[in-house]
Image 1 (cartoon, rainbow, N blue to C red):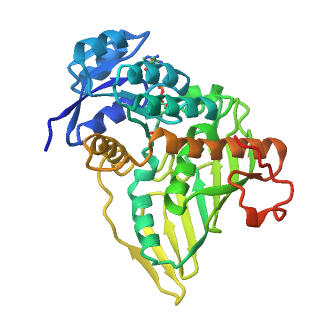
Image 2 (image 1 turned 180 degrees about the vertical axis):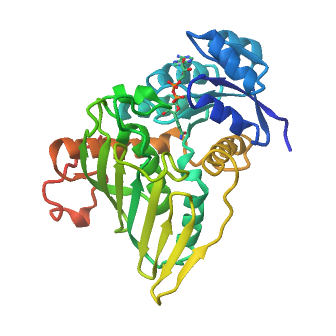
Image 3 (image 1 turned 60 degrees about the horizontal axis):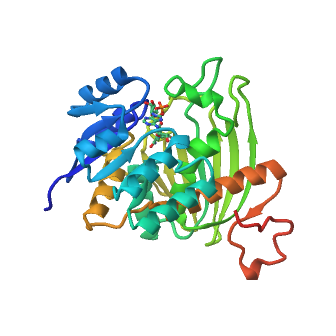
Length: 357
Ligand SMILES: NC(=O)c1ccc[n+]([C@@H]2O[C@H](COP(=O)([O-])OP(=O)(O)OC[C@H]3O[C@@H](n4cnc5c(N)ncnc54)[C@H](O)[C@@H]3O)[C@@H](O)[C@H]2O)c1
């Protein structure tokens, strides 16, 4: 085993303490410093509570002083570009929160910038590491439900109603692009993880809560290159039985031989064609959303150490963001949008948009 990698984290808001807690369970790395801005008191408190020895508000000074092996960015998307470029230009590998940038073009530019400098840039996409999705992937790949042809990912966090919605992340209310950009990107990435590339989307959006600027209701139909359909059915204004439940909602994967159901507490059930209904037992690790932050951060460290392949490098993640962008385009123009046109489908899909995004 190599030496322990030393990370420097940027950001001290809602998600930073969750990410810092997760770092304590990652082997082969530790966070040695925390950088924020505007509120040094808050940065110092977050660092102290997480047992991080150094905190400050000057990134360049922190890099100079601590000489980190990697930068862990946990700040809003609009700030990612500048922070990524500063680290990459100095040869420091980066783990950066999703969405990588405010637009696909900026995300693609960042991916190219990192590639040119030959510095790893990985998106911290922890959703696909939730244990129910890992287990679903294992069961699907083992053929337990036959060929999956229809999946519904039903997102119902129940936290977006009233004059002061989203108490954990109040900035959500002011985002002009909300559910698809902020949270849908997790689901698109997870759908790609489970079922492969998405070649066409049809999407409708609505704003239900008058107190929010962006869309809080999304129904996106994603067509995979394998002929499957994934429905991302997201409603943050609706009532939920459990607010911000462990799995944020439910999933049902319908296959030719059976259906796999994931409940909002992560429990799994298999419905077989012969009528059997079987509770599927599997391990849900402790930690935030079944240890998914630990697992995603571990994958990054393992990749830096050459012990694994990073699952969500920036260049790959741009594809996920293209699908999200296609959903916005589809909703705005009330029509299907094709991402990777296949010649055999030419003329079949009608007025689908084939412009590269
Ligand atoms: N499942 C998940 O992985 C998950 C969950 C929540 C948030 N996120 C993502 O994490 C990121 C942060 O979200 P949040 O909810 O913690 O946001 P937040 O607004 O609560 O916190 C952002 C923090 O970044 C700091 N910051 C902003 N610009 C900075 C800069 N240039 N230099 C240093 N610090 C800076 C702010 O002062 C603040 O402390 C976003 O990209 C968000 O999408 C991911």
